[in-house]
Image (cartoon, rainbow over all chains, first blue to last red; front, side):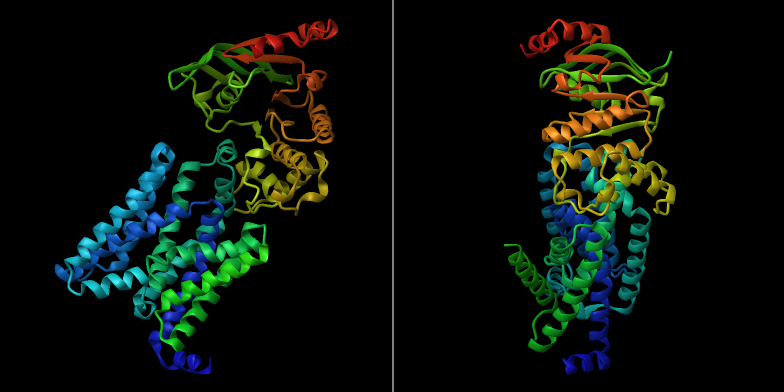
Length: 275
Length: 241
């Protein structure tokens, strides 16, 4: 363990990887708790995969068209927020075929992303990086954006937690209380999209669902208050990110997959406790 | 005057099926209304129309002499759903749930005032569950959960309380307790209660609305006559046809 800590001290890339992991843990623990208790894991999966369309498009603009000011992170944020709003609108006004539409958005988003990336130099490396994550790849600008988004998420949740709680638990009561149920639901989905973009930096698109759901699902076993679940989930998420990166460093595994596997293992163990 | 809710020629179609046909009635302030009728007769639709969750296909609904569409928040109307409809695994404490009844009062920064907490605790006291505030809602029995939902409705300090079969999923002891709570509220709050158990509720209710596509009203005197003559069950039997 000492050598990993030493490496953290001397290797700034590794250090920023760990900082990125911890920063995204704050968002994933809090927002993941809403995802788990409102049972919208499938919706979140669709948002996370459709994000690839924005990433691919911006990479293509940047590398193939030479537009220097666009970055994959911007593309991811815009695509994530747009697909969150689209799914939200479908949920609120066209509920009959909601799951099919969610699945369609999922695959259309990925296909668009893959097409754009295929037209971009360095196809395989880029695609793999975004799909399974490359935490050692975070730039100082990315870190600054991560922290800014963290702050936005924490402040919004501080102001809106009680409103989100009732949106998740009892929408009818929220209506009677005069809340803007539709706007709050869309806001929650947008926060989920932003969190997903944060997490993609750390574990990649395929493994995002692990970090969004497993820490909160484990926390739910140990607590029956949403605010407590959030604290536990943030702690667990940070723990998985830190120990996963350390383990990956020692045995030379991909960081994102190691983090996700550790989290998955912890979930299985905590589920065994239930039986 | 003093009619608190008015329906004027309200009809409601669901997928071209007529659920409610030309329904008109007034609910007086302080009344205790029992709503009865067969399953699928339109009881729930009637409640949802009154609550504003559904819009009438034709006709108008008035609260306090004001048209439904002009009233953004349904002020002073509280709703008690059936406790069975909730996710038992949802992580929420009893106090958090009762405080939901004070959300109309929540400031933008999202922190309840002391007055809100006091109102919530008083409501819990009123339903006889003062020591339950820290319990998880999912661990309560059916009767306790129903009483907590009543407490949430009362925390809003409503003028009208609407209950959807509050005794549907509870044991007889809890049922008696729920009727005891409603009896305490009688006269102070206008109560509209959907029920299958009119026989037990009849001593509380002072007007009965039978819903079976159309609506039939029974005055208190008529109910008493039916009751006295042992004919009170007749409309129920007729409605089950």
